[in-house]
Length: 238
Image 1: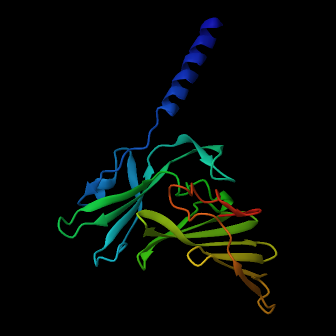
Image 2: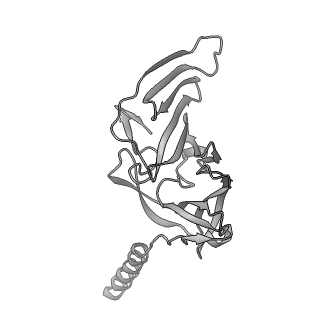
Image 3: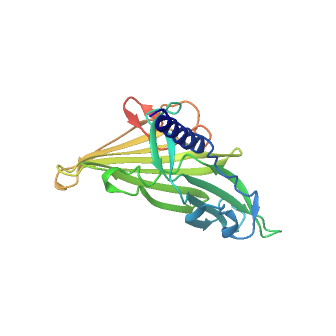
């Protein structure tokens, strides 16, 4: 019996050690093709091209996903406390500026946290909806939920040598009643626009309001951990 317990203990110890030994790979600082950005054990999940720094050339942004699941601790509810442990495939966001002279893509930022994982969309399933580059900005869109469905959108721009959150949109609706709330955040001009209404009763006028958006410092990939991690006002999370 003691031997049985010893075997189980050693097995659990090995599993714990394997999980603790996981480290995110370091994306190369310069690549000439998108395939070179993909580390061993990972695959390309999404990519988009577009001018991010107004130099007339198409830059590159990719999302990479691990081939294997790990036990990953994720932040929810605030920007500091990791409180949810999930078994899932990690994802990496990597953004590159294209150098006109060398035609190589130079790594601008690697972010291991912001992109939602496949199981973080609730019963809706995969939460990733869109990634695009427009007007020198990166657009990211996610969706999920169950009875209450939600959509989140984020816009980042390279300002003061950091990828800064310039705009965001948060909307949610009840799939049964149609009641919805949409909030549009303009961090540059510090404005908040709110739209309340019902998806199934369009004859009823929606109620739209605008107000000054109160917050501290602008958020970047360094200070905005991931979706649902910034309580920007009481009980309102981005």
